[in-house]
Length: 436
Ligand code: NDP
Ligand code: HSE
Image 1 (cartoon, rainbow, N blue to C red):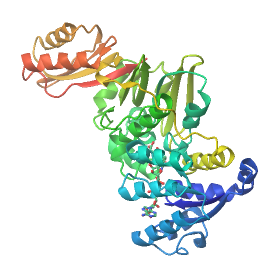
Image 2 (image 1 turned 90 degrees about the horizontal axis):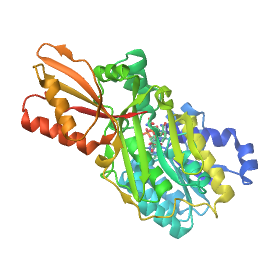
Image 3 (image 1 turned 120 degrees about the horizontal axis):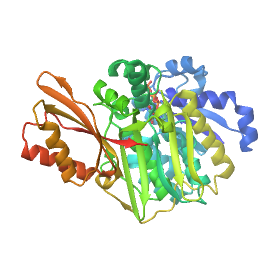
Image 4 (image 1 turned 90 degrees about the vertical axis):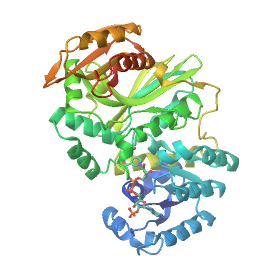
């Protein structure tokens, strides 16, 4: 199997390293010799030094390439009958990368990629073309790096019904939250360390605003339930607004704040959301720290399963890419790219039932707590606990933990407070599901 790698950064460089270091084992495991024919990279000098790759393996013999030269080298790979499988590790959702992937599959070549953003946002036609041309798309690396969740859902639960998938699917945000909660580090410091460790996306906003986690849950929903969900339809909240006081409220209810992806099937409806949640310390996910990811799959016949591992990093993510290459070499003809399409409804996340923690910043006036809790009760929400008020000058902050209810009920309660007591709320209340 002749292989080309496009983009030799953190992940692509890791792939080149594993192919070179494990060449004999890979040949035995796949019954095929895996030959790394060429790598296209804009700055081969950097990649060559970082991953100890001989310069002559790079298109252009190791000299820096302009974007145009790289595009020409990629064209040669796509049109070359010699190349069987292309690894795309440039990343991003640009027309350029989308077009490359389309042309790879149209040319009858297998595609292996870690690019969750591309597959989740613009992947439908790439999957369609791959079907038409009988080629395979490996994307184990696109969801939670080293954790074999794609194959687990696609291959191992075919004899079961998946009731829900939940978990921590973004290493950078989990790293930031862990360091903020466990060591009191500031947000910016923690983000910088995550970037230095190679966990963050080229655009770290995607890690922080929940976009990257959203891409991953969209791909898992596609595999588990056979429906395509767009980023616009998915309810996503990131971690950008998590403050020290939220961490204090979490401590007060024995919980840790985690960015959680949650998808659940209820009859013919699929509910899904990505948002920071108060994860009770009794829940396994509360103890998953750093860049580690953890995915829980709850099924009808076999119960609960948890996969934990490294969700990002060079060799970790590259391992999943190389495993996909072996899988394609072994089972290519029989392998399915995704799951059969189903006609399920993607439901409004505002109808998703959770217990919630709502944090209110208010004017510090008599009757405020009473008015707010009464407004919550008027929307048929049963309150579990109310925290003490933190008084700061003329302001007060407190939180309300509810029994399970719909987000929509909370939103209408907040609307009632805003309408009937303008000025009572000093900022938009923060609403986080509580995960037991
Ligand atoms: P990097 O930025 O480290 O690597 C991308 C590489 O592609 C860079 O070396 C870049 O060159 C090169 N490149 C950019 N444009 C071109 C071009 N036109 N032609 C050839 N090469 C080009 O990103 P990562 O390796 O971290 O990520 C790659 C993909 O893997 C992304 O889709 C990401 O979401 C995904 N991923 C990453 C994980 C991680 O832990 N890092 C984990 C899971 C998935 P240069 O920078 O020299 O300009
Ligand atoms: N930026 C991603 C993360 C990389 O932090 O999880 C792995 O997909």
